[in-house]
Length: 240
Length: 302
Ligand SMILES: Nc1ncnc2c1ncn2[C@@H]1O[C@H](COP(=O)(O)OP(=O)(O)OP(=O)(O)O)[C@@H](O)[C@H]1O
Ligand SMILES: [Mg+2]
Image (cartoon, rainbow over all chains, first blue to last red; front, side, top):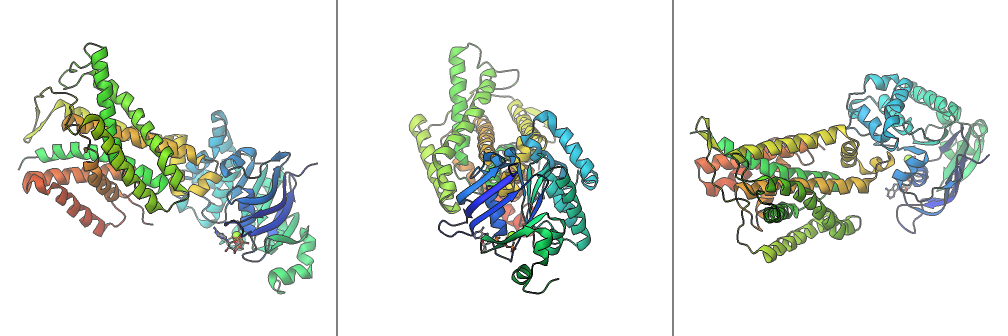
């Protein structure tokens, strides 16, 4: 079976000649969560931004199933089934919750839009209640849910999230991650970039540790959590 | 004092407002102040004049006034044709100039380029049509008395109604349609809009079309109540920007409200202290409002 997402030897950065992601590879199968961990500035955000077409790719390839989507502009990636929830500013605060969802539904056939949004509301009942509210007035947890809902509208094959737990209380993180597990159960391949290694490895199937723009360690989530080399590198030897 | 200034101010304000909406739209989508916007107003008026004259030659009766109005259906047709044409002119200018600078040059470079484009477009009009004023109609109109000393012509009422129709339609487009949502999304966060599947280049094109079309409507209004001259748009530039900033740059209702405030302030000062102070009065008001509300009447605080 071919992977839902296969990234090979990716080199990417903001200025030509200054690679931030330096030869990173990553595969995710349908119905699998892969956690991307690593110290601050390791290039985790840059890696998924490059996959999503937001940051320029210098070399390497990105395949979605059998399709080569390397260097497609970001708005075309979505049409191919790759959805991305950025680390910050991941929702249009000036638009209502419903307009955020309608906007994302723009790439669906007009006849499918209402049905898909209704499905998303069943999955996120909180958002259904707040549909008329400007998204900027949602609480932190609801905002993260809205951002995920926005990405899910297009029924993506691959969902990439950049630190969805940032700024949330442990209880809310639990809620968000429980949702991710349900999304995985629907067969979506998930790339989860996280600072919160404990929470991420607890739900992930596999994990990889990115250091200086390439993967240093890779393995089953449970093994990575127990690996002393990982603990030393990633957590400075102290495990929370 | 009678209330005539109010009627005059609302009409001027409507013309300024339609132009200011274009300025504010371009600013919110492309983040630059387009000084060539006044030229879209003038070009819109001349394009409409061209179509109206052609229809007058081709079809007898196109120029015969409709009821109490001073113009015939030829001008209505001309407006409907010239609006998209002016939109295309704006699109062509973007393609030829702004798009080439947008991603490479600093925003001040783009602004200066728009200044250059403004001069070139204006001089081209002077070259083609000389600086002698032209008119859509030479019919004289009898003013209707509305009471409280207010007199308006049928043309003026029609133009205020046209403004209302255009602004309401634009609001419906922005709030109810997919392209409207996309425009609001791009204006808030261009990178996220891309991630959400919005084709930003398409949104930019639509923005120019709408801005150009509204500028044309504004030009036709000025041409009808004042006159058509190559400088007619350039002379509107300061009031346009005053209105856009006053309303809160980026806000559509703000631009219209700003236009009305500037228009009424100008008319009030013309009626009280003298017509030569009208521009000054508008700017004193602008400064006053910005001191109290730095983000403008409808602006969101950054
Ligand atoms: N827009 C940008 N332009 C230029 N350099 C950038 C930009 N964004 C990030 N960088 C640089 O790229 C490097 C990696 O940043 P990145 O955001 O990918 O790290 P990260 O692993 O996501 O870190 P964190 O855990 O803090 O989110 C950093 O050195 C950063 O300074
Ligand atoms: Mg990051």
